[in-house]
Structure formats: structure tokens, C-alpha cells
Image (tube, rainbow over the protein chains, first blue to last red):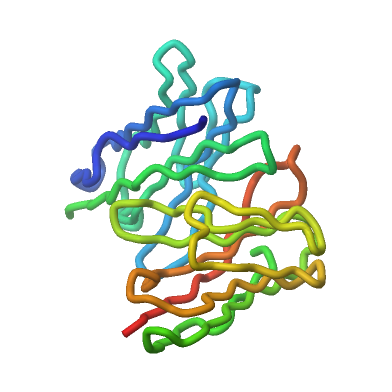
Length: 113
Length: 113
């Protein structure tokens, strides 16, 4: 069975400082992993995805994530936070069976001026 | 943006009444999904479809039914709405299992009084 654990429900950083959002996954096979972002009262937008190619994945808006099989982790990072990054972030693992998605519970990122 | 619309965008209804939410896509994608979003739970899969008239249950399907009579439309029905079904509902589409990214609609906010 597939599952995702997002280790922090809230993260607060100052503008210009690094961002780290943590995600651990459980999968019975080599997974496909995603990060989505949701701004307040908006839909979900794909930030990046890992599908068994390069383990360091670059996404939009300066975000990147590294797949670490030995640690079953897929943490999301950004070198320098911007006020516009304030949003909720979801880590997702997909199921090979009809590509069903399993979401983590989300991490709300607050960016302080 | 992927061509996905949801209707209605907001609905308030009373316990015991039937409710139907519509998802419409213009992308001709084969796979369609209904999720609900609740605080602290991320998004959870209700039902999904892998083709016209081909549907199956997700992890939180009790109290919901779906229908897909055309490629472009996926309907979610609450036969007798309950307060526990107050939520935000998202539709998603996926072109193929290989592509495996899902594109999400704008959401429908449903309140059951």
C-alpha cells in the first residue's frame, strides 16, 4: 500500500531564508512522487514530479526535491523564500493501479517579511 | 491550464437532499477522479473512472456514487447528503498512466446544513 507522511503541519520562515518541507513515503514498489501547491482558495498546481529518472528534481518557482530511496524521503527545498511562496504544500505518491493519488496531510508555509 | 471546470462552485444544501456535482473536461483525457479535501487530511480519493462507464471506488466512497456517460463529464452524486459530507470537492484528470500527472479543477465548496 502507498502512503505519505508530511512531518510538519506548519512551517514558518523569513523572506530570503531557505525552505525545507519534509515528506516520507511508503510504497511497495518504486514510486512516482509529486509535490503540489495550493494557494488560499485556489486549486492545486504541480510543482514537480519524480518518476524514476534523476533523483534531484527541479520544479517551478525555484523549488526542487531529492528522492532518497534509503531514507524513503522526498523533501522539498528552496534556497530563498519569497512572500508569494506562502501556501499549503502537498506531497503525493501515486499508485500504479490507475494512477490513484495518495496525499499527505499538507504543510502550511508561512513567510514572514 | 488544463480545461477542467466544476459546477456548481459553491452549494449549500440540507441534510437528506440529493446533490450532484459535475466535472467537465475539454482535454479528452481518459482518467478522471473525484477527491474531497478536509483540514488535516489532505485530499482523499472518492471514486475514479478509467473510461466511459468504467468507474471504481476510492478510499472514502461510502455515501457517494458516480457516473461517466461521456468522456468529458464525470458526475459525483450524494444520494442523501449528511453534514459529514461538508467539504471541498476536487475533480482531476489524467491523460494516461505513463504521463501520470493529474490536473485539478478549481473545486466545489459544499456545505450540508
